[in-house]
Amino acid sequence: MQPTTEVRHWYGFILSLITAVMWGVLPVFLKLVLHQLDAITITWYRFAAAFLIVMLMLVRVGALPSMRALSRNNNLILLVAALGLVVNYVFYLMGLDYLNPETGQVVIQLAPFLLMVGGVYFYKEHFNTLEWVGAVMLFIGLMVFFNNRLDELFLSMNDYSFGVILIIIAAIAWAIYGLLQKKLMRTMTAKQVTLIMYLAGVITLLPFSNLPAVINLELLQVGALIFCCLNTVIGYGAFTEAMYVWHASKVSAVIALAPLITILSMYVAIDVWPQYFAPSDLNWLAYIGAGLVVCGSMVVSIGKGKAQTNS
Image (cartoon, rainbow, N blue to C red):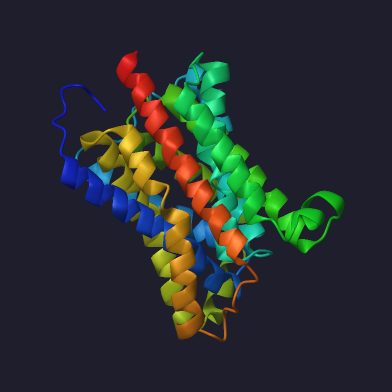
């Protein structure tokens, strides 16, 4: 956040909460659409809708990316960043096809932690005590969350462990995208960067997408797909605005609530759409683990905020 920007605490908190809710319920609606469409096709529709909406926003204010921003120096960074975002979207969905939404949302919490590790390695940032405490809590939380599945994760390769691996790859890809976005935003705004990323995704995924399959969706699934497309823009838009008007560490701490929102959303989804969702096999220790993951993410965010304040 720029130092000249007025800090608006309640506005920033509400925007952060909107982001957490949007990202928290997203896996549930994605799971609905996955009953009929494959991961690549869903991602293509999400990228296409997001590209059109963001482009209209930028055209309206005359802020489309300039050709100077697409310089030779930026081309390789743009290419790798776009690949990272595409892999993140597709592999997360592929993993979600094998897992319940709660597990997918808990595992993807590795993404901001990996981004922070990348910042230490590539940008020479430093871990402080709070960040170390948060990191330990996050990893203990993951182990506790998988308490009754540890043998499947480490001793065998089945659908469950394969799904977890896919989402870990998605988290790594998002961290790569985030690290490169930091460089790109020296010459472009966040919206300009995402516009190029969405366009790259549309072009890359088109040959592998089964677009006509959308006609086979039930009305509920059509609504879920539309929501997923809008969620891409609304969730990220609220996040970007929150980062502009509030402290980044506090925004990240609120967004860390997303896994808990996913768990609550699943309880509702099982009651409302029992034909699509079955109760998860999570035991009480798994829920404690999910809470530790959330707390660990929050502590890491607060620790990062203190480090930036002291620097």
